[in-house]
Each structure stands twice: as structure tokens, then as C-alpha cells.
Image (tube, rainbow, N blue to C red; front, side):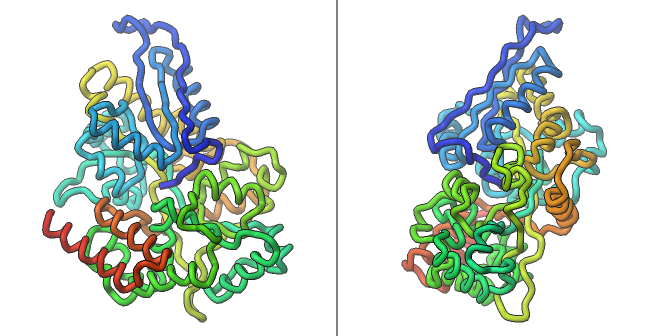
Amino acid sequence: MKLKTALLSAGAVLLLAAPAAVPAAKAAGPVTVTVWSWTPVTPTMNAEIAAIEKAHPNIVVKATIQPHPVYSVSLQAAAGSGNLPDIVGLSPGAETQAYRPHLINLTPVAESLWGKNWQSHYSDALLTEARFGNPAGDSNFYALPQEAQLNNLWYNIPAFKKAGIKAPPRTLAEMEADAAKLRKAGYMPFYQGAATGVFDVWTFLMIALQTAPNAVLPAEQGQAVWDQPGMTEAARVWQELFTKQVVQPGALSALQYPTGANLFAAGRVGMIGLGSWWLQETGLSQVPGLKTMSDYGTFSFPAVKAGGKPTPPFGGVDFGWGITDKAAASPDVLAASKIVLKEFISGVGEQVALNQLNDLPAFGGMKPTVPMSAHLTAVYENYIKELPLAHPHVIGNPVINQSLISGLQAIGAGKMTPEAAMAEVQKTALAQQKAH
């Protein structure tokens, strides 16, 4: 899941609607399809909608884009009051599962749009992650990916040079030393928006892929393996990021988006956990170092132990779209929603997004058609090469996911030990197994 809202303030709401010609079909006027999401960012969604409405003048797309924390609250309230939109943007796993009762099964929809072999357009890894958290025996799709992502760490090249650092850290010890140099040079060392739970989960899982490589996937799929030694060790490393002052002061009350991303773009942060979606900044900024991405480089979470290896490729579904039962209540709206869904995923909408480097294509055969600098091309092509190898990056069960977030935040605040926090997550996982 990416949280790309750098241009939106915490309470901003974007309503995008354009007039459309009256279609020759039986409907008296254009059919309006409502879309809510936290992504893509305003300019990209504007352009996607314009392309879709141009291709389908009998459809009007009315989109509401909010920063992810605000979006989550709005979505919860709408689900509780029966006022969900027709199409919702969703991260795989916990978020999709939280709204599954309000979503239609998209398997027959996909067959109608792309044929019975539609799954061949997606990698097995993306198909698997899209269904993370489904009840046992439920192989349906409740959200389909528009784009994919790789999660990694980014660093500011000029900041590293000013701090006297020649290359990104290869070990945790080097990361701690580099953080001290960056602080001395006037930069925030490693920005962790720890009030944004999904980024806490991602950082923890990057670490756990080193300390407990065989436990992470079972944990993501709902198994009670959270108190294994390697998982507790990952929690200790997470704790060390705070105690060794690798993360910035006030991290627990900080947001990754928009605050962290804006500070990183402004050159005030040395390192930050983002991902492939950061490439979109090349189309959103006129600052030369961002326009060409020449001021920024990528690296994996460094080896926790000397002689170890950094975190392997990590990622999966960036975001997807679900169609709600509200849309299904109207044949005209449902038909129009299916068209919009297709254009978002494999049509003019996604082509617009890819040309703005919004993220990586999820649907086979899609790719950007715009020229890129040599540096940008190298970064992008490396992402494409690593994507098929990426380890899933989401937790399927929303209750376990929240338990982990609470535990990580408590560790960072010094209110729980790593052992106690992981024991609580384990207790939650065991209870969820019994409940299901």
C-alpha cells in the first residue's frame, strides 16, 4: 500500500467532476460513478479522469481524494452509515478485508472484462497478495490491483555528501553511525512517520525478513508465529532505531505523508522509508534534483548483523480498486463502474498514471511511454527486475495488523519491551485463529 498525498494537507478533499456529453444510450444522461481513495495524487487523478471521460462521454467520474489517515476515518464512517461510494481504493490484506462485507466479488467482473484467462495478466505474487486475509476456502477477489510497488529506503545524495558519507549504509551499525553524522550536519537522520501505522509495519517486516525469514509469510497469512525468537529480535532492532537515535525526535507523533515526504523532497531528511512510488516526484516537481531524481538514491534495509545480507526485495500490490454493493444496487452504475475499473487497471487511466511514474504496472503489458533520464531509467528498470522477486508486504488479518502497530508504537515509546509486545501480538493471532 503507498500513501502518496504529498500535495494534500491533512484535511484536503478533492472533488473531481467534469461535464460529459449526453450518450446515445438509453440513459437520460451521463452515469455518475463515485470514487474514493487516498491515491493517486491530485494531478494524476485529474489526468486519469479526464482520459476516462474523454473515452467514455456517457460516464462522469466524481472522485474524492484524501490523505490516508483522513481517508481511513471517512471510509469507516461511510461503511457504518451505508454511504460508501461506488468504487473504493484499497490496500491489499487488512484494509481490503475490513471492507469485504461491502464489496462485490470481482472474479466474474474480471472474466467479463478480460476473459476467462484474465489472471494470466497478473503475476502469481500479486494475485496471492490481493487475496491475503480471505476466509479459508474463499478464493474470490474483492479488490483488483491497479499498480504494484517495491518498498525500500531512499537517501538524499547531497545530504550524504555534506555529512561526509560516501555511500548508503550496508549494516545497521553503519546506519547508526550515519544517523549521527547526518544529525551533526543539520539533517533529520532517518525519518519514520511512526504515527502512520502502515510504515511501522513495513519497517518491521523489512527487519524481520532478515531475522525471521521463514516466519514472515506465515505471520502475514495469519499464523501465530509472532513470539518466535527471530520476530522478537526484529522488534529489538526496531527498538534500537529509537534508542540509538536513528529516527528523528518526535517520530511517534509524526506522519510519513504528507510531512515526511515533503521534508525529504525539501532536502531536510537524510534517509526515509518510501518505495517505487517516489519516482512520481519527477513529474510533480520542477526542482532539478527531483525532476531527474539525480539527488536521490535507493537502498535496502541494511544487514542487521555484520556479514549478513540486506533485506531482499519487498513489496507487492500498491493499491487496488473494489466495487461496492452500493454500485451493484443500480444496473447502470454497476455497468459504468466496471468500465471505470477496466480503464483504471489496463486502459487509458493506468497509462496516464504510468506516464507520470505513479508506480509500477501490475497488469501485464502496461509500461510508461515517456522518455526518462539515464539515472531515472536505471532506478526504474531495477524496480521492474526486482518486482517478480518481491516478498509480500502486507498482513492479511486487520486485527493482527492493528495489534502489531500498537505493539511497535509502544516499543518506540518505551512503554513495552519487545518481548512483551510480541507476546501480545501472538495472543491476538491465537485468538483470531480460534475466532475463524
